[in-house]
Amino acid sequence: MLRLTDVHKHGELLRRCLSGELQVDINRRRDAEMQKLQRDFEDSQSQNDAQLAMFRKKHQEAVNQLTEQMDQLHKVKQKCVDTVSLLHSCVTRDTINSYLFFLIFVAWQ
Image (cartoon, rainbow, N blue to C red):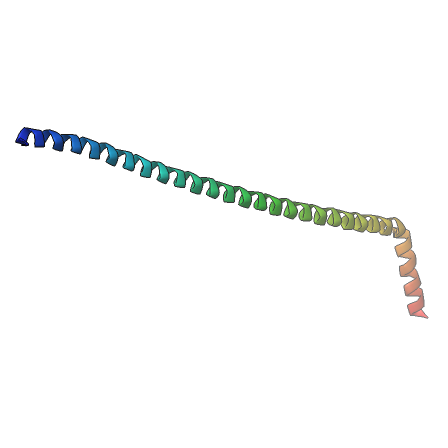
């Protein structure tokens, strides 16, 4: 026949076993959740790295395009400066006076 103390001892032993199994189950679930979070973090990090690479590429393309435009503008500016310089060298005061004299002379006739 079972005594109350025996039942109590068996109950305590059963509680300890169940408590240990429960703790193992909790630890297993926590580990699974941590692994899932780690995978999610790594996936997110990978996506961020890909976006960063894309943004860097777009930035570099924009910089290259603007640099090319600046080079073209410098060439056009230099051509303008050269043309103005040529015009200044061709048109002097004497030439202007000669043209004015010619215009006045033609106008009087």
